[in-house]
Amino acid sequence: MSEPYNELKQVEMAIKSAQRMVGQATMSMDPDQLQAATDAVNQAREQYKKAASHQTGVDAAFFEFSEELLEKADTQLNEAKK
Image 1: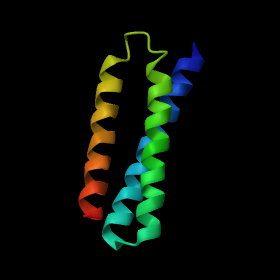
Image 2: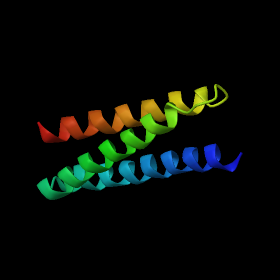
Image 3: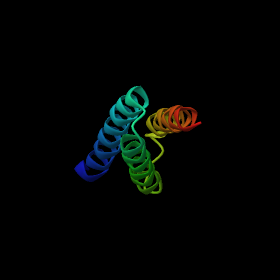
Image 4: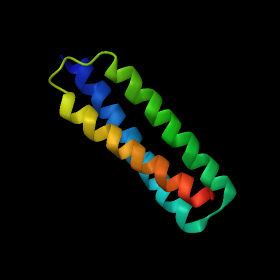
């Protein structure tokens, strides 16, 4: 029972961490920070995909919200890199 919860918590923490990194990187516009933020978003997306492949159906709202957050982070990074 706790394993799916832990997996979801890991996804949530990875997304929050990526969001913070994206925010910092887009404020500083430092190329290294932008790359690190891109890597963090990609890692969060991989954790998301792994967790989504094990979802039970009760977590649908969580996965939908997580996908939206990842898309926003991607968009923000892509705009900053232009």
